[in-house]
Length: 117
Length: 110
Image 1 (cartoon, chains in turn red, blue):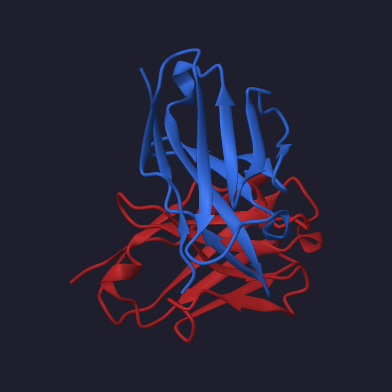
Image 2 (spheres, rainbow over the protein chains, first blue to last red):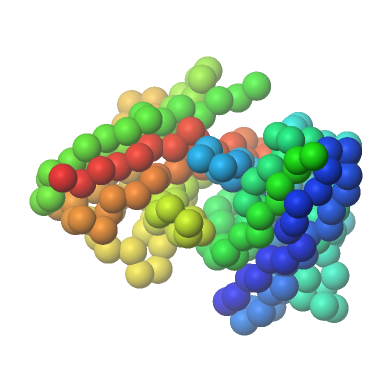
């Protein structure tokens, strides 16, 4: 199982960014997937999850209305579209494989998003 | 807003035992929250230790164990080793697709 995030960069407040997570080593369309973030020096925060088909989506209140999670099962890829970015969105963003037992069994290495002028 | 609380830090001697807890700002933690535990060293991604309260993830040594103690989830390290020095996070599943991470505990082995 391998999860590789990409797309992180420096972006100005109010800007947009799209993160990607490329999955391999397992049948991607069998698993729910999740984004988790970690601000510098802080703890982990659940951001969003998407069902295996993409038909069911959940968001943390802190990102609802600004972030959109999606997936392309044909490309074994997970995405996070982030709009109206704020300084407090600065974090390393991890994608993680979700399981039916309500835990995350595999994690990517993360991609850094910095929101600053 | 739900807050999941953990001790900020713990120190344990090599070979010693330490129990970390994971509580709710309001209410009790039960197996219905499917508590899971992760550890993370600086600059690295989290790694799974325990899921569904007490099931060890593949490859996790049996010195790590999970349980419910009173009204909290708990992670016990028995016979701590130097490479157990890490940040530890619990996660509770709140239902309706929502997860909440605990505040994290920094464990020092010395």
